[in-house]
Image (cartoon, rainbow, N blue to C red; front, side, top):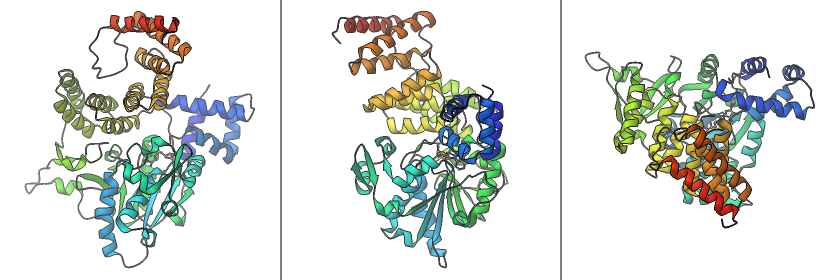
Length: 480
Ligand SMILES: C[S@@+](CC[C@H](N)C(=O)[O-])C[C@H]1O[C@@H](n2cnc3c(N)ncnc32)[C@H](O)[C@@H]1O
């Protein structure tokens, strides 16, 4: 299929870019809509897409990435409720403080803010604050308005908080009405030329994990639009992985309590703070991307680094991990990611080490952060599968290993874990098939094609093959 004209049309209408790693999503989306509309050719569908806004939205609903969860990068909410909002309330002459969530997906982010506001300012928080959330994806907004969430939306939520704000309903959890009513949802394309009054004059904007899907020109245009939406002395949060690329002179990059964010008309900028009395730049503390709670630890980051330095550091970090010097390796990966947030392999190495140390929540956050740069990263899916497996979440593990196989069908490790899951479920046929694939792949391509940067298994290939043959024989005899 000729994807180029589709990519151009989508980029023109909403800024989203589909590089090679994301082509599979686009292709699947187009195929699905084509069959739904019973059209024979891609040309016909392209024509329809350009003419019918409704069809364009239907395709968008399929190709946007809605990955989100409650209390994601929760240090931002702490800074908001403990520092920014109390200061704003003290200086406010009247009217409510407006918080806007741009690219809110299925609602976990704005509802997290509402919960944080309720915990800090009480059930009548809506008298002090208005909370507006928008997204381009109508289906995601439908779910946000419904406020019913599956278990995996709560991966970062302590039990006691979940109990306060949600009640069990069917297979999911329903958010309580006071929180739900505290958020207004609307559909809005960030790439529009103008924004409605409802979102203008915002005091705080959350624009996290959205810009990574835009091409650089669109990123800058949208960032300018958002800056225009923001009141003087207002603040804008991006995810830690996205922050540095937006330091383009539109808003001031500031550091507060180890967290980086942008401010409008704010006096102290990073560039200013970094200058010492003799005019030389001073190192500043870097918030380790994607690790909630670790930001305040304040690791030092030198300002000037050579271009190839992250890659040399990466090799050193890998060697340190191999030598079981995990703390040193973690420190180094933190620095690499701080220098080059788009270095996905460094995120994966870090996540792999954290899994090895059983620090699963941190590993998951780092992994998702890395996958923000490359949604179809094989290692990302493998590691998320391992995390789910370690938590006993078989369905999620199965989903992730299947995705890994989809990304690279010759990844024996993904087939191996799928085989083990099917075996555990007593599903003999698919288990046997998967074990046979593992044996074939190992014999043809060897052990090293496992797909992980940091692989801590120490047994030889023959042992894996032997184990697979043993399991196969047992299952064929009807024992397992
Ligand atoms: C990965 S989710 C991020 C959700 C949430 N902000 C978070 O950090 O967890 C990205 C969201 O951006 C939305 N999005 C993508 N392009 C958009 C656009 N042009 N206008 C508005 N929203 C957009 C997608 O529909 C998707 O729901």
